[in-house]
Every structure is written in structure tokens, then in C-alpha cells.
Amino acid sequence: METYLNTPIKEVITKFPKIGKILGEYEIGCVPCSLGSCLLKDIIEIHNLSEEDEAVVMARIAREIYPDREIKVLKIQRKARVRTKELNYSPPIKRLVDEHVLIKRWIALIPQVLESLEVKSVEGRQFILDGVDFIRSYADKFHHAKEEEILFKYFDENLDIIKTMLMDHTAARGHAKAVAEAVEQKDKEKIAEHLNAYRELLSEHIKKEDEILYPWMDRGLSVKQVGELFSKFNEVDGTSGNGVTERCRKFVAETEEKIGKSERRFQNESI
Amino acid sequence: MSPFEGCPGSRMVDLRSQDAAEAAPTAKIASQLRQWPIQLHLISPLAPYYQGADVLLTADCVAYALGGFHNDYLKGKSIAIACPKLDQGQDVYVEKIKAWFDQAKINTLTVLIMQVPCCMGLVQLAKQALASSTRKVPLKAVVVGLQGEILSEEWI
Image (cartoon, rainbow over the protein chains, first blue to last red):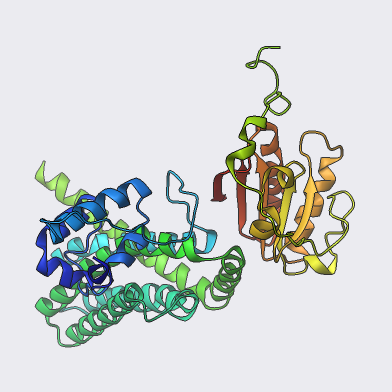
């Protein structure tokens, strides 16, 4: 069993597909993970299962691997923490979660933006480029940079969970670049392909961060580190953040208004 | 008086039957206190040991209930103690806590209180000071049970 605890989850699930289903029952979504290199023992710690759930999950996994033997699974060592009923983010982590809200507002608009996509006029192209500017300036240079240059430095960046997040950031940059190029080429299909891919990627990415990565990080941060992070985020917000945040908030609000207006007009016309 | 009457903060509870719950450590535990005074009326919020520090604001009773107080909570931090139920002049407390945020530029404030309802007043004082300060700082509340168990630990 020790060997499997130290095996990447993708390998474990490939060999024992039912284990993926067992993890899924506890909202541990390793099956669709793009990387799957987290070790089985780390997954149990990262997801902060209760002791009771951990015992049940591990016993079921052991039965899948060794159906003919009775296996005693040792409890996975982890830091003792008080479990709270709801997610209680520390203030700096809460700020990152709040920044996700604006990003989610933009990605929620993408399907409607694509429905009325227009690249013949300068205004139509500029609208998409403004969306790319939001991705690059707010989601990436402002938000992802806080993670990459500050938050992740408090952890071992060789951990698979962090590597997965960094790969998502790189993929998101690729989609933003592809959309900008497609606007130049007036290629509607390519714009739609990469904006949709960005929407799917970021939706999953934000969910992983809000529900798994950040709570796990919060459990590992000391009070001192929380204070340091808070100050460092304040510094970023105070120097480069304000102008970017205002501009990007305005872009999202105006886009929501624009789409809301056209939807209202469509509804009125249909009546 | 029936056990269900009166203020929970001063209700009599006999915990002697719990004596054997956990063996006391045999080695001498070093104090982690690194300042004096500690009572909130007596301290200066601008004392050097508060500058940029992680500060504990602890209800008077906590250190007696919490077995691992020194190593688990006090270590590496500066401290002040107060009783939100019995202490007079609590408006001064708010000003001093505010001075920690704005002038001493503390890194974090952790408020350690007992589970009794009156103790929540100490968290309220900290929240009031934070609301009126210009500089914001992470604030954490830790609630300790009568036998030193941690009942909750939350960022506010």
C-alpha cells in the first residue's frame, strides 16, 4: 500500500479506475485533471478530508487495490488544524478569491460576446482586444502575478499542485495571444475557439484554486506569513493595481450593460 | 443555584474529574514572554516590541486554560492581556489597539478569548479599532474551551 500512496494519482486511477470514482464521491476531481501527478497520499492531505472520511476512503481504496487481502492503512500525517464549517480564507487569500469574482464575471460573458462577434469594423475588433486586455492586464499581470511572484514563493514550487496551476497560467497566456492574433487576421473561428478554450480553462482553474489550492495553502501559512502576504498584496494594489482594477471593472460593467441591453432588446422583439 | 442559571462566564464548573486526561509534561517549559508590562492599560502601543509585530490580544483567563499557550501561541509574538467583562475604561483599549494598527504598524493581530459569551467583547473591541483605523491588518479570533481545547480559529 505504501508504494501506491507514493504513486502519482493518474497512474493509480489508470490501473484501478474505480478509485477515481471513489475520490469523486468525496468531491476530489482527479479523473479529469490535466496533469495527475499528485501523489495519492498528498491528495488526501490537500483535500483536508475529515479523519472519519479519510479512514473510509483509504479503506475503500485499499480494497480496490488488494481485493483478496485485509490491508491496514496507516493514518496520513498532516498538520493538526481546527476544522471550520465553512471556508474561512485568511485576508490575503480572500482578496485573491474576490479577484476571481471579476474574472468569473468576464468569462461568464464570453458566450454572448461570441454570439454577436463582429470583426469587420474597427469597433468590433477593438471590443475583443479590450477583452484580451482584461485577460492580460487584470487576470494575468495583476492577479496571476500576485500568485506567481508572491504567494507561490511561500511554498515548494516543485509540488505538483503548484506546477499544475502554473501550467494553467501558461496555457491561458497562449489563448490570449492566439485571440489577439486572430483579431488581426479577422478570423472569427479562431477567436471563438480560443476565447471558449480560455473560458473553460479559467472556470476549472478558479474552482480548483478557490476550493482546493487556497484552503490547503491557508492551512500551511503561519500567522506571520499571512501578515506578510497581506502587506505585499497591499503594495501591489497600491502601486500598479488601482488603475488596472478600475479600468477592468469598467470594461466588465460596460460589457454586462451592453449584453444586457441587447438581450432585453431581443426579448422585447420576441414578444 | 441550578447549573442552568446565571452568567455562563461565572457559572461554577468542577473539572477535577478530568485530571488524568493528559499527562503533564515532565520537562520544564520555557516562558516565551519577551516583554513587560502586558496588561493593556499598562502597555504603550508604540513600545519597540510591538513595531511590525504579530500581536496577541489575550483575555486574562486564556493562559490558565490553554495548556500549550506559550509554545503554541505566544512564541514569536508580542502580547497584551485584558478582560472585556471586568476592566474599566475600555474606550482607551480601542485607542491603543488602533495605535497598534496605524502607528506601530503591526503585522497581524490574534485575539484569544474563552468560550464564555462575555469574552466576545474583546473581539468586538479589536473589530471596532480596525474599522476606525486607516491601515488594515489581518485579524484572527481564537476561541478556547474551558479545558483548553481550541473551539474555533477564524480570520475575521
